[in-house]
Image (tube, rainbow, N blue to C red; front, top):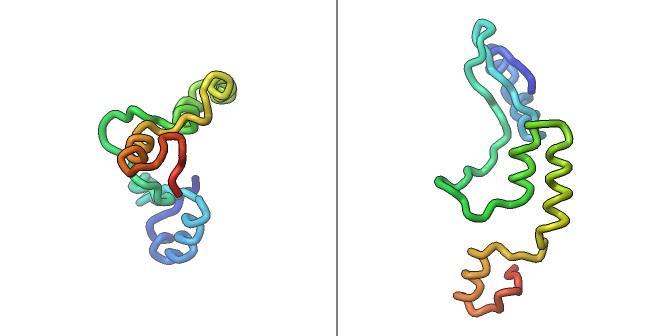
Length: 106
């Protein structure tokens, strides 16, 4: 993450936006105080509790707790979780659409 004064955002907007497109995140400051963050767009998550959470999201959410925890969790999940499991909501939509439950739609 980079820190940039608001004056530089105004003067170098195009370059900053190119860097954001490349994945960089900026903290914008006024008189040295952080006031905003400019970061790459990520689609909003659904509101409320989720009943189907991708394994990668779980591992990523816990990775900051202790070094190596995410790797051990990922190894345990890979060992015990069937990768062939289809999202139950997608399976329901497929059944409603008339395709077989195990088939994936394009």
